[in-house]
Length: 278
Ligand SMILES: [Zn+2]
Image (cartoon, rainbow, N blue to C red; front, side, top):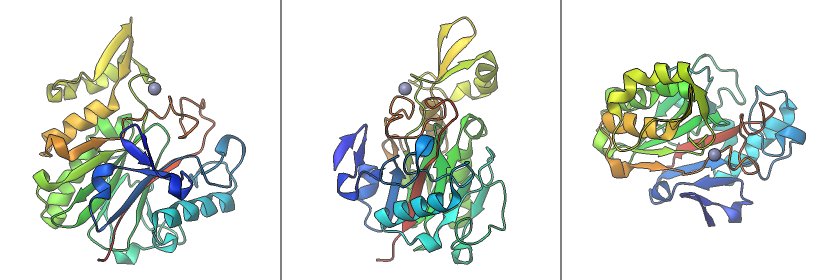
């Protein structure tokens, strides 16, 4: 494996995914953020498109999801998929949910975050510039996965994940580790005045890293990673327990799908996390 940003690109697994070094050290955890490599889709979806709601061939996407899950060591037929609609809705997932969204119809809608304490139950979320965040409490052995675009970030879904882990499983925030996956960096995320105003109520969370950098009149660059880091710290996570891929999907659109980088014609990457029985 080689270093890609702050992650390990898993060359021994055909570069299908990359992993957080911090998470690799947790023995009962499987996880990974997918790349575009090693799949069977073509054209703008080349090659590992995991988006079942894209216009790609459905069978190919199902095969790609299997390829990704198997490369990580997860059982594809037990995958639980989110139903992302830019909300802050979080679902506690149990063994009765195995396969939902993948090989079984889901009986839930509008779910952008999932948590579980169940082993052998892989959680899968999707992103193409949006912020994928993986969570683990190594003490209580609880995991989570959340999708935070600018809307989910604004709704503080990251903090709501921490609160849900506290409420449902008595996790202590100081034990929780969060991994912020590849997403659009402030370098490529130019936004207008409306978004600046949307985020103003969160400015009090700002510490050393500014959320916005003004480039011209009414134009800013938004740092979604910095916002999510601040939200997670405010939710009680220790700074050293927040790891960040350090990878802009738009700058690395040859490696990851990027909505901006590919002008909307793109597939989706996935981030998976699973507790192992050991
Ligand atoms: Zn960039």
